[in-house]
View 1 (spheres, rainbow, N blue to C red):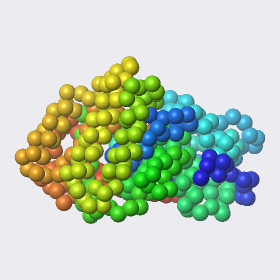
View 2 (cartoon, rainbow, N blue to C red):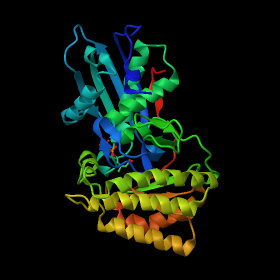
View 3 (cartoon, rainbow, N blue to C red):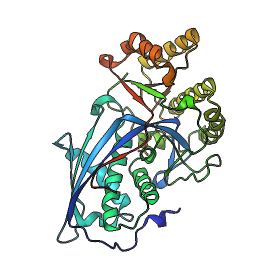
View 4 (cartoon, rainbow, N blue to C red):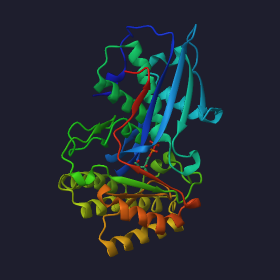
Amino acid sequence: MTEQQFIPQAYSNKVSQGTVSWESPSNIALIKYWGKKKDQIPENPSISFTLNACKTTTVLSYTKKEETSDFDFEVYLDGKHKPDFQPKIKTFFERVLVYLPFLKEFTFKIETSNTFPHSSGIASSASGMSALALCLMSLENQLQPEMTSEFFNQKASFLARLGSGSACRSIEGDLIVWGANTTVKGSSDLFGVKYTYAVHENFKSYQDTILLVDKGEKQVSSTVGHNLMHGHPFAAQRFAQAHDNLAALKPILESGDLEAFIALIESEALTLHAMMMTSMPYFILMKPNTLEVINKIWAFRKETGLHVGFTLDAGANVHVLYPKAEAEPILEFVKSELAVHCQNGQFICDEIGFGAKALINNK
Ligand code: DP6
């Protein structure tokens, strides 16, 4: 596929007004996307678990305008008008206009809500942008009913990527790869694809308990963070390493080797933070409690032999990952030992999910 293939022909149907709605989940990268080129093209491949509980629900209402004018939309979060969300969505609309030429022909109302608190430090961009992309695809599907569901999902992922890179991995589940590479056939820089190779039982229903170590505003926006990889002294090695790690992950996923899995994902997480520490300007995104948690996870793992590991995003929160079969003692450990390092003792229990769901009037 090329970008050109997502530019529609003249639409066959007319639509005057309606409402569509989707819920779309967040995702957690095992191999991290960090560094991008123009037009949200990733510098290296990434792979993620789609999540289940952390999600955004978006309702998109649309009315055809008398005349085509500039973009015309309002955004609401939990029922409250949010003019401050406007610029980000306007930028998104501008980026995708060539692929969705109807955008200036309608007045839109975008109503959105998240299952996780807005100020939890959990990024809502992956679930939010994917939910919006899916709603827009449902409208396009009404304008152009002859569309396969494969194309629908692919274009939704393609559009979501233009909103936020990691959002392209939230359309489907349970393991999604984004970024062209030689390990996963059919992989693309333009959209996420399902990981269709053998995956051992150990990884089915994998658990992700998200420790809210720091709920504050992000210290470094992801755009600034990605840009720090331009001219970074270790960039080339890092991008090559991500390809190697993806190749190494394939036999691990197949065999169910939990020790090797944990070593790989923890190394990925710490490498992401190492990139931030060795860029110019440099940042430390972990907090003292992040390190307390990591050390406790390592000690607990050594003592019990249980397969608990962690990953991090570009922030202080810790994702505690473990197989469902070991959930009981590990969750007990989270409650008794790790919750004290979370703000107000807060953590969110999530697990692998299977992607977005249509709620109203969709294909
Ligand atoms: C550390 O997708 O938030 O979570 O494309 O600028 O919106 P933009 O960045 P974003 O970056 C996410 C980076 C990460 C790793 C990952 O999810 O792969």
